[in-house]
Amino acid sequence: MSSDQRICSVGDSFVAGVGDPQALGWTGRLTAHARAAGAARTVYNLGVRGHTSADIAARWFAECLVRLPVGSDGRVVFSFGVNDTLLVDGRPRVEARSSVANLSVLLTTARAQEWPVLVVGPPPVDDAGRNQRIEELDRTFEQTCAEFEVPYAASFRLLADAPVWAEQVRAGDGAHPGADGYAAFADRLLPAWRQWLGY
Image (cartoon, rainbow, N blue to C red):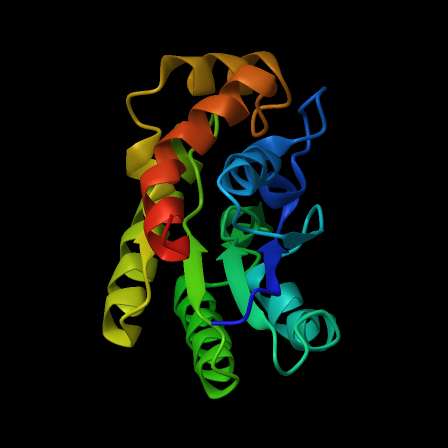
């Protein structure tokens, strides 16, 4: 394995850490944990607020290709789905079957590049109806990742018993938490993250 470990974290506003006054989100917190252990030497945050799986599928490869050169230990974290479930004129921005198809294309392309992948599922928001769609997407994403033998962190279930997440999302914009909420998110992702990086 190359000592030049590079990770692209590709996704939406949760990847970018929107709402966190410390500007870390869960990605920054996991990066800090890994660096303290000598891993995750270079991490690129490629989160874009409002992006759906379709938006990510259209942009991610070019962004990662220039950041993960041949010879490096290049890896990719994908995390998206909440924006797919937003209703516009009564229909989701991206239908569930298309979300799954987009994920499958991402995983297929990453495999062809021999980039190890970790997928972080969509977290819950402060909207019961939307949460039903997010939970269903989370489960389908998990099944898809199992088919590809790619590790998956089921964020919806991981955060179901995290009161600080729900409280901060409710107190914020209805989707994004503050620092403590992201810290709880990172804590629940940590086992999958450590196993994926092997530290």
